[in-house]
Amino acid sequence: SISYCLIKFNIINVRISGPQTVHTRVSQSVTEQQTTITDNNSTCLTLCSNSTGVCGSSGGLIFCLFPGEVLVIGSDLPIVAAPGDDVILPCHLAPTFDVQGLTVEWSKPDLKPDPSDRLSRVEYVHLYRDRKEVPDMKMASYFRRTELFMDAMKHGNISLKILNVSEEDNGRYRCFIPKL
Image (cartoon, rainbow, N blue to C red):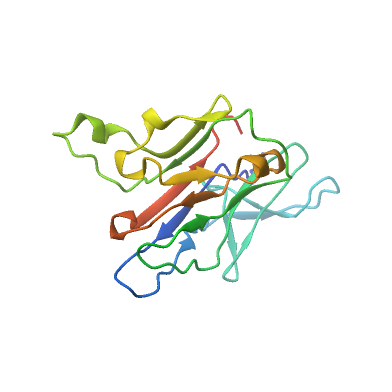
């Protein structure tokens, strides 16, 4: 059987500290198994068989797109920020299509909830469902500090803007669309 790349999410590392610059990059999980096929219907020919669907090759990323498949793509370029800045965590779909009717989840997978605080079990930095933001499902520290670009969602842009970043915003961020 043939394994193929299907990007369902990207993990983005964000580091905010002091007045210095901050570097952010997409975390890459490189597969040890790659298969190359010749297929006139595919956009690329390198296939991967890892759980995240990210293929690595010569230090770069190869995304495999087959007819009917959708990729969720983040940037591998650094994002520079300082405390108090607004940052955009880039994420978009390829091919582009309207995602306004889908659920978009942004989370911090490494964040450990405080067991004594029942509200800390809320895991989303930003949750978009049923064509609107769901503020009750957001972590309290991100309330009124995150937003999607609503008009751009009809073109597959699911980038997240975080306002007024602080050291507490350090960590990895995950963008996920459950129905892809």
